[in-house]
Image (tube, rainbow, N blue to C red; front, side, top):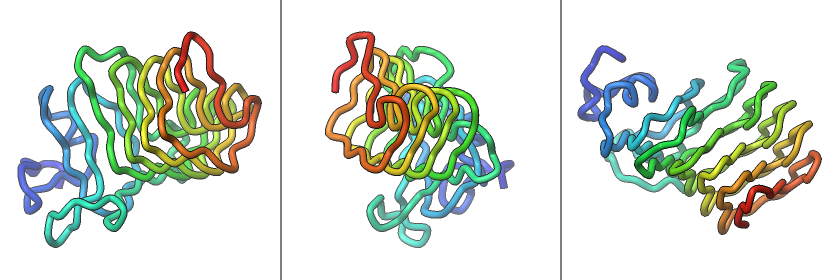
Length: 186
């Protein structure tokens, strides 16, 4: 239940957002394998790591899939609403099936937001960045596939951010893979 403390697997929160809301800068939210039909608004310095076994607590995001499912939500799955002072990681999560009209089909990143070891698939926006709208954040070691935008960047609209060591395939839109501007680095 979301009324539980969230300090152990036995007292885990039901929603990722409930855990983020009570966390303080420097804390890390450990998310167990499973499918979560929810979106998350990031907080400065609160890291979110997926890929944990529900039975052992072992972490391997290639075996224990933590999935944010976007069906029916009509919003971005991971949103950073402001520039952060602290580096803030989202790591080892699969984001899929997001569909809405704002920028960033699955993710909106800003300064000091880092998306790493994530898979983003089958996301759509009528705005820019079918998978990620990256305004000075970092996308690293990710896989982005089958995403689409009606605006710029079928996979990523990169505005002064960094996209590194990331595989992009099967994406569609104006600048199907990456629309890079504002001194962005790819």
